[in-house]
Length: 253
Length: 275
Image (cartoon, rainbow over all chains, first blue to last red; front, side, top):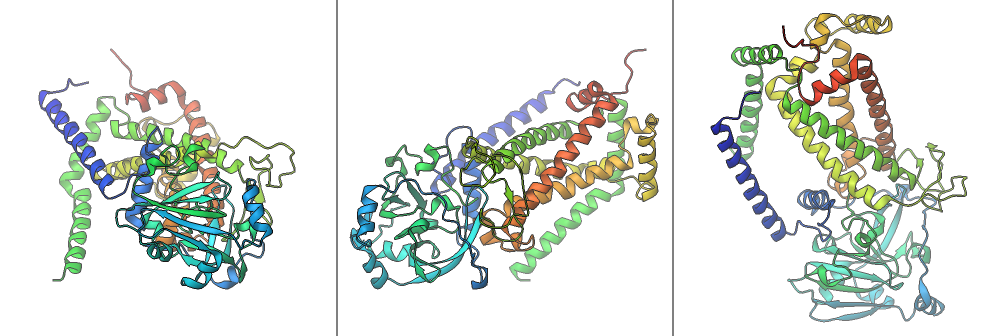
């Protein structure tokens, strides 16, 4: 082994210094352009940050794949649902006539929308997309509803808002997406499926479909949307319930 | 010249510069000299090869363990775009699942470890990708691929491969040249693993990302659908596990300690010390 020369040591020092400065600058820029996920801490933080930042740079504006009607699955899989609770059962007994979707947080005009409001006062959109579960299974269905961005603009979404947090009536499931997904035309406040009402097993009466991410981001039985610029204020500050259970916040992978 | 042409032109120049660099007589001569100097100094594997080898090993073990764990939540495989518990599988792995809705035939439900498994799977995948990039650039620019991985001139035929296989089958000791250099069969195996299996396993992994496939639909369409990509990802893992088994067996047969020393310290295994 040849001993390290002084020149090599100095060069290595300069390279290491430049590397650290570069990383610091990269982290600052990534933060400014929204490339850091809320669950960026811990030993899996670097991998998660790389994944989210890369997906945002590569896939911010592209859409999830859509399929021909002939590829709609004959046996879609509802998956199990955690107990929906008393509030859900009461509303179900009334045919969901009292179901409300509240829109609040960083909006100029907070809204409280009934299912009838959503169906008749907003543009209707449908898409044939795949639900892919992190477990490995997947199916294709047609989803009918109102693109989330119409609801947000009706509520007067403030430009400072960076995320939309959404809640299930079961008071357990809550999620959030960044504005890249919240304003994406395929992100759908969904009430219909395959030419009918959205069945309860699939999230009816109201589910937020986020087709560019895995199934667990498409929360069933949604009752509230909250626009925010800071996810730290919600739950344990990790962006959604998933990182609290050990699952990634960003599920576009 | 428009900007598009200029860009095209500059990338063409870049490609030509790489080719010229790889094959210019001065570079080749220089490279041969470095390789010869290294061999006479008793060095078997250069530092970059050793570091990237072990980083790949770490990433592979992490990916394998977490990959197996992820399968436990749905040990069924399908062909085509979709697949659920109610659909006919291509095959199943006969183990209990970590979800009680999966019809496995067992009454037990395994613990669900998908959260950290998925986090670690993708983090290890990043390590693999960065290591592969470093190794790939190193291999092209230093001539490592041409010198050590692509079969040597005169060895690029079935006869050379058959000869090596015959020697293995008769358990003949390696000849003098083989102690220092990879033979045609080793090189072929490394080519398949480095240039075919690893790129394919990264591709089939990306083909399961709903966001990535939205931006690049061909990445999954060419494979026959999302479930086909998942099944191929599983088969490719099998190919890599097979390679790992043979790789470790051959090292054990050739002298585990000396081969490990060569891949850790870089010192040639066959070199005699002292007078």
